[in-house]
Every structure is written in C-alpha cells, then in structure tokens.
Amino acid sequence: MRAQEVSGKRVLVRVDFNVPVGQNGQVSDDTRIRAALPTINYLLGQKAKVILVSHLGRPKGKIDEKYRMDPVAGRLSELLGQPVTKVDDCVGELAQSAVDRMQSGDVVLLENVRFHPEEEKNNEDFARQLAGLADIFVNDAFGTAHRAHASTEGVAKFLPAVAGFLMENELNMLGKLLAEPERPFVAVMGGAKVSDKIAVIASLFNKVDTLIIGGGMANTFLKAQGFETGISLLEADKVEMAQGLIEEAKKRGVNFLLPVDVVVAVAADPGADRKTVPVEKIPTDWMALDIGPESVARFSEVLQAARTVIWNGPMGVFEMEPFAKGTEAIARVLAETDATTVIGGGDSVAAVKKAGVAQKITHISTGGGASLEFLEGKQLPGVVALLDK
Ligand code: ADP
Ligand code: MG
Image (tube, rainbow, N blue to C red; front, side, top):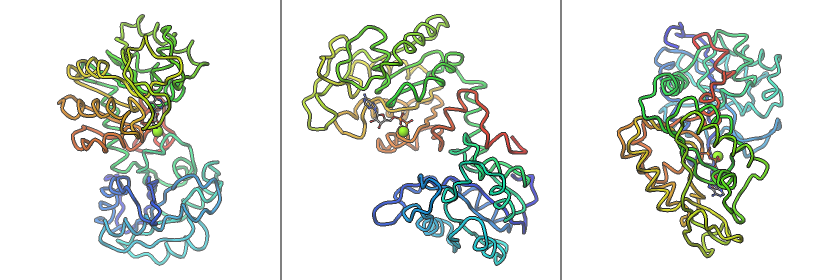
C-alpha cells in the first residue's frame, strides 16, 4: 500500500467490521475494528479521503435494522478520535453525495454491503458502482478474502487494488508458516465437525510433524479406530474418510494423536452428570464433551517440544465451564511456550481470549475460514485480485 500515491485521493477500503453488537446496540468486541486502525491511520496521515465498506452479519441481501453499521461508526469514531460519517447505503446517490462532500482526512463508513444481494453474487455492475466512489481500492479484510464477492474481488477489476496492512501481515505470517516452519511443527485441530476441516487436515500432512485432534471432530476418528462413542457428536458418513486420513498419516510418517481419555456427560449441559473415562470406555448413552487430563498431558508434552504450532478449533464445548478445561489447558501451554504460535478460527480465538492469554500468542488470525483455505494452499480470490499479491 505504501507504494501507492494516496495523498488527497479517494480510497475505498474493504474492512472486516463484522463485529458482535450487543442488545444495548453497542459493539461488544471491537478487536476487528482495532485491527483495521493501522491502515486507516496511515491513509489519514497521507491526507487521503477514507471510504470504508464492510459486511456485518448475514442480512441475506436485504436491509435488516439489526445489521446496520451505525454502532460500528460510533466505536470507530471513538478509537480514531475524529468524526466518522455513516452513510445509509453503500452505493447510489446517498453514497455518492457523501463522498462528494469529503475533505482530505475525512472518514466515511458506508452501510452494510450485504444489504444488496449483488454483493455475494459478485455482480459486476454493483462492483463498478462501488468502484465509482473512489480512485484506489485497498483490501484489508483478510477474514473475507476467501470469498469472491463484489466488495472483495469484483471491485478490484475497476480500480488499482492493493493490500492493507492487516491483510499484508496475515499473508506474511501465514505464508512464513507454510514456507519455512521451524521444526517440530505441530498442528492442533478441534471444533465441532471433521467435515469443516478435512481439506486442511489432509493438506497439513505434507507440512507438519505431528497432528493433534481433539474436540467434537475427534469422535469420528475414535469411531474409525473402533471405539464406541456413545451419543457423542459424530459424523457417521465421515468415519471411512477419517480412517483413510489415519492411514495416510502413518504412510507419511506424521505422528497422529487422538485423545486417550475424555470427559463424558449424559447431556451437553453444565449441570449434567459427568465423569472422565478412557476412550475405550465411553458408555453407550453418554457423550464426550472435552478431552481428559491424560490427553492434556500427552498433547502438552508434544506442544512443549514444538517450535511452530498452529491451532484451529477448541478441544471441547468450552462455552460450558465443566467442559472448558481441555481447551484452557492447551491455550496455556501455547501461551507459555516460546515457539511460534498461530491461532485461527472464531471460537478458538474466543477461547484464547477467555483464558486471558491472547497477548502471549505470536499471531492471532482475524480470519477463520480464510486462514484455513490459505493453509490448504488455496488461492484466496480477494488476494489474487490485488496488484501487490
Ligand atoms: P473455530 O470457530 O475455532 O474454527 P469450530 O467452529 O470448528 O471452531 O468449532 C467450535 C465449536 O465446537 C464450539 O462451539 C464447541 O462447543 C464445539 N465442540 C468442541 N468440542 C465438542 C464436542 N466434543 N462435542 C460437541 N461440540 C464440540
Ligand atoms: Mg466457529
């Protein structure tokens, strides 16, 4: 971005301001807004006219009052210490006249781009309208870079398009991880479903020394190993594939670790009866909701010896206190090691924050899906469209 002459220019910046907004109409976690500040402040320092555009939630192509950008404009204005003009549309006359009134150093935040169905369809005419508001396009929305939408990919066809600092930093951090990881390189995968993450697991076999699997997805692998999984979350149609992945790991000499014990309960309820059992003793009418202490010990040992760790997906139903211990323990191990640690995934990041150790992690990715697709080795459409990719 620094190579572009932006002074006095109208710069359209695609940001990821998809933040949680509470009942009180206030932004309840401003991490993503803060993450865009380096780019915004740089542009303001260059006396550009900064036009911001983002999506918020899933309004499905219609105006939805609860997904308006006004709370974001309020919080951004506080963080910047200057007014932010919120516009009630992102294209058309409202947007154009707001931009026409801008002075150098002004900030405009356009309305939720997903209020228009053309956004997710990557409609060319809509992309041209967005582009018409500006002289230069900066994409700083790493979290949506894996989507070819009008405001991420389409608009880049009509304007000189470059990466913002957040985007650049994500690509550098994740790129380094794949290109030259210090070894041992360990990946920890968890979360609800294997199906979400099969592709990344398979591609990680080419890269990591050890793959650790926990969380709900571990059940499908345990089943593939012949264990009873009771009423645990299970993807029965993925058991065969899980079996295949285990064999593939063996063939490639990748150390493949599954939980050896789990916390089981009669229901996914903090008040439900629970106990810790070895994986070969999961009762038929109980469900596994967290990894047990012996699993934590084995995983920790491997993680403490690692030089590079990537983590995606919690080890258990961490939203409920009785099933959060495994996830918290792994978060602490990653916080204490001096290895390079990278965490992606909305829930994993939330878990690390909840454990209070986020500042001890080398890199917390702002993009869950985007970081997974990047690690799979896929080209991200929002990145491919940029001049400085
Ligand atoms: P991320 O957002 O970090 O990518 P996912 O969305 O894939 O993670 O998975 C997070 C969800 O997985 C959490 O809501 C958590 O409760 C759930 N989960 C983790 N372990 C289990 C389990 N054993 N059984 C059911 N759900 C689980
Ligand atoms: Mg999630």
